[in-house]
Amino acid sequence: MVVTCALIGANGLGMEILLATNRVDMGKALFPGICIVILAIIMDRLTQAMVNQSEVRDDV
Image (cartoon, rainbow, N blue to C red; front, side):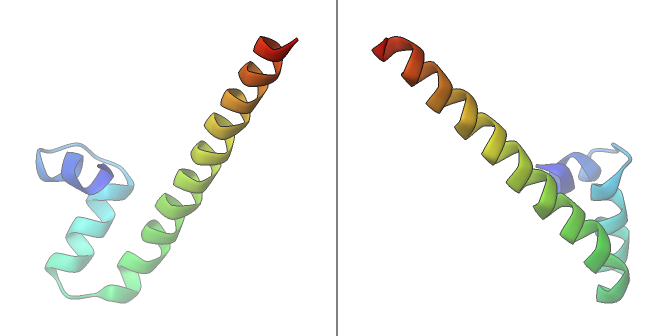
């Protein structure tokens, strides 16, 4: 999604990846790519914890 947003003109990590891959400079795309993966993992864990917490409340 982040790289897709960069295709329509949004700035940020996606733009860094897009520019680096257009220039075939995978070294420059590596750091923003890792950042996006880490952010996705954090968001996944947070939403998973919220769902688990709401299930516990429903059981009580």
